[in-house]
Amino acid sequence: MEFPVEISEIHEGERIRKPEMRLEFGGLNVDKKFEVALVQPPGQVEDGKITIVGPDLPQLEEGRSYRLGILIEVAGEKVEKDLEGVLERRTHYFLNYIEGVMHLNQRSDIWIRISKKAYAKGLNSLNWIGRALIMLFKKTFPIIEKIQVTFFTDPEKVEEFYPKALDTYAARDAKARGMMEEDVDEFYGCLMCQSFAPSHVCIITPNRMGGCGSISWFDARAAYRIDPKGPNFPVPKGQCLDPVKGAYEGVTKTVNERSLGAIQDVWLHTLFHHPHTSCGCFEAIAFYIPEVDGIGVVHREFKGSAVNGLSFSTLAGHTSGGVQNEGFLGIAIEYLRSKKFLKADGGWERVVWLPSQIKERILDAIPEDLRSRIATEKEAGNIEELKVFLQKVDHPVVQRWKAPEKPAAEVEVEAGLEAAPMETVPLPSEAYLTAVSPTGGGFRIILKNAKIIAEKVIIKREEKK
Ligand code: SF4
Image (tube, rainbow, N blue to C red):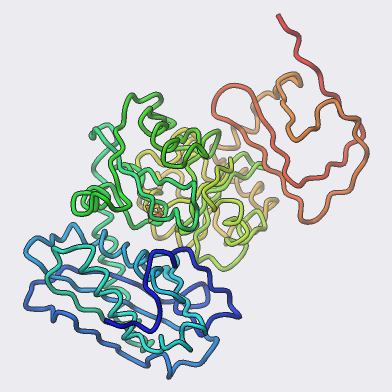
């Protein structure tokens, strides 16, 4: 079949900036959007059928953002319901193969841009995108006997189907909740996001879904079984070095190998020392708040500033790209339900702030005695208000504030500050401080882009015994 643009892996990772886009679907400016894959009985799928419910690309105004729903229905004797999540996530891959199409995120967070250049070349109908999807799905998964694709661009139709999409995701997520890392011999890895974050290797366990929130341990296992050469692969657990931090011999070896040495080690359940890397399509960010020694969580759809004054996109800048940045961790919303959720850092006892929308969504996963003691934007809009709130409700982190100070000799100062005579310097408004409080041994402070006002700084060398 002749396409007006190229369809190839070489287009993965292509970025389309706003001035270059013909239009976009979803993203931050659009309230409702989704992509969902469903396995259907053969009689309900008409092979090759593409339906556009609402206006097509030429009828949509240039430069604007629109609602979109993508429904992919497949059938085949060997296509099991378990594969829905796997197939759905491949939409990310396949749409990015199309020259002039950029696909980010997943599920009800999708963000798709079509470039002006591609539109001018003839990519002027969603029909082409449907044809590309059908071709790529059938080529990659020969077990698919029938496939049909529906695009909803009519905003009311998106609204109508939206709750069904959310129910589908919720049912899928619930499936993996009963299992623990201790119950399995192997985890799974995912390299799907390496086209955007080359050193990122997702480790997926029964207690840790991929950061995008769309690949559970079951999904990754199913994906490997039907496509062993694809982006998902088994990760032998090896010896468990620390069940609390989530340190495993096999994980260390795998991230080392698959990141080509860029990442030395990953601990699965902590923000500190060796946090999991984050690509860019995580659903939420867990971030350390040094002023209260607590952890905040903010999700992609939260429009305001988090309690530390930073927007989601600013925090994402510190979190993404496949690097390890202590105190910042991209997570799936489902990870908030994990029995090992940030276990090494204190789990829910350390969480002090999260947006009310997320709190309501996962309220049943928060220990009952903490529910009213974790602030949202309604109780605390900044750090000062947060401190007052935490003291008022006697949040467990308040106990940490009373811990005795470490002697000066145990403070390690990074960034070439050692023994330098300190001048008085102003604190710029953009400066931020990340103080990292590890969960065991010593104390380390990392100062990033910070200027410090101090009358005197004394740094003592530890006496060698
Ligand atoms: S976030 Fe992780 S699990 Fe999800 S697609 Fe990317 S690499 Fe795979």
